[in-house]
Amino acid sequence: MTSRGIAGVLNQSMLMRCVIAAGLAIGLLLTGCTLALAPGTGSEPFTLYFQTPAADALVEVGTPVQIILVATDRVGSGIARVDLMIDDVLYQQGRPVENITVPVFTVEMNWTPIQPGSHALTAIAYRTDGSTSPLAALRLNVAPRAGVWMNPAGVRYTRVL
Image (cartoon, rainbow, N blue to C red):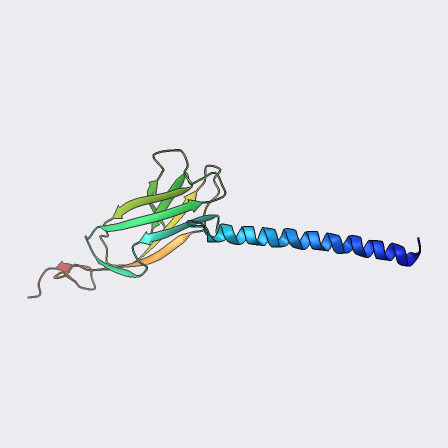
């Protein structure tokens, strides 16, 4: 064969490889798009978010606050635990009841604020191997009770004389 014949065979071989590679890439892309659009799937494999309360919500001192956290682990061993911290102090932990781990874990926790002001709520989910989700965080604004006035010294009054 001449060098031109070898080049033609190599070009056809390379062209065939490129066509196959392009076909595989398009197939993977379409499969990935189908998976991303399937109900209940997302782009992040390990997530945690506050379903309630809304960020920057306003509640009154002494009023119970319902906190719902949703953790999802699409590719790992599943959710083993969710920790809720209030103002950087561990407040409560939630664990699945039906199994040691679950792929989607919704946990409800309640908190009754006793101090007015802005409070930081943060949460983190854990797998059994100790790996963690990204931190979920929000601020909750707590107002004094209606009819209760606090002076700067912190003394509470229910009426002004």
